[in-house]
Image: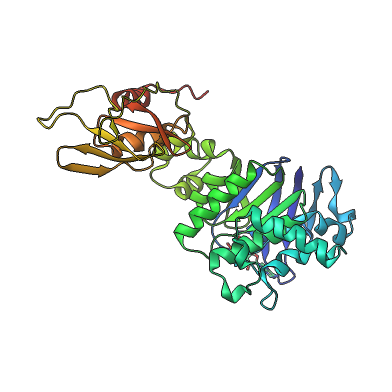
Length: 356
Ligand SMILES: Nc1ncnc2c1ncn2[C@@H]1O[C@H](COP(=O)(O)OP(=O)(O)OP(=O)(O)O)[C@@H](O)[C@H]1O
Ligand SMILES: [Mg+2]
C-alpha cells in the first residue's frame, strides 16, 4: 500500500507541481494517474521512489515513511519504466533487461537468466535478445523496458507513460499484454498516462489530475464515467462516456446453442428464419470453430471477433450492432460457443440500472 499524506511539491524555482495530495494506492492494484501535461503526474510518481522529495507531507509504503528508507533499498523494491523505454543504447536487449539485477550485485550469468525469463514474460521473441535498442521497433523497446523493471520482481512497479511513444496498434497490444500479465503478477502498479481511454482500460482506480497539481477525482473507472466529480473530469472522459460505461455493466444475457454444421461448415446462430427470400444468415466457422463470416445467398460479411460471454454490455451491444443477423456470436478463447439475441441485448439496455 502506498499512501500520500498531505503531499505538496514546490520546485526551487517556485513552480508548485503538486498541492496537498492525499491518496492511497491499495496493494496489488493498478492505479492510474491521468491528466493533461504539466499537472504533476510524473512529480507524484517520482516522489514514490524519492527521485523527487516532497516539500511538505509524507509518503508511506506498507506503513513505513519512505523518508527514513535508504534510497538504494527503496529503489530496489520498485521497478521503474520510463517514457520511451529509456534503454542503454550500447547494451543488448538482454543486457538492458539484466541491468537492475546487476545493480543488486547478482552475477552476470544469473542476472541474464532471470532477464531472459522477464523478456519471455513480456513476449519478446528470443531471437531479439542480442539486438541493440536501435535495431528494435518502438514497441519491442517498450517490452524490454517493462522486462527490465519486472526482472527483479519488485513489489512496486512505477510506469510513466510507458506506451505513449508507439503507434495505436502496438499500444493496444502492449495494453492487452499488461492486462494479461496482471493475472500472473501481484505487483502494486502506478501507471501514468495522458490518455483517459488507456486509464479506463487498465486502471482499477484512477486519479484525475488537473492544472495546479490537484486531484479532482480518485475513483474506480466506472464511477469516473458514471459520476464525474466536476466539469473538468466530465470533459476529460468525453462525450460518449454513457456508452463507455456500459463496458462496466456485466451481462448475464442468455447464450443460445449453435445449430449443426452444414456441408459448408456453417451453423445457424439465431432464431429467426430470416426476413429475406435468400433465407436466414448462416455463420461460417473455421476448423477450430472460430467465427469466420456470416453467409446468406451471395453475401459474405466477416464475422469479427464476437462477444466474450460476460465481457459487459458494451461488448454485447457492439457485437449485435456489427452483425448482419439478429444475433451476435459468443466466443470463448476464439471459438464460437453460442449466440446472443439482438433484442435481448437491447432489452438489457433499457432496464434501469440500480446504481445505489
Ligand atoms: N525539476 C523541475 N524544476 C522545476 N519545475 C519542474 C521540474 N520538474 C517538473 N517541473 C514542473 O512541475 C510541473 C509538473 O510537472 P510534471 O512533470 O510532474 O507534470 P506531468 O503531469 O508529468 O506532465 P507531462 O504529462 O507533460 O509529463 C510542471 O509545471 C513542470 O514544468
Ligand atoms: Mg510526466
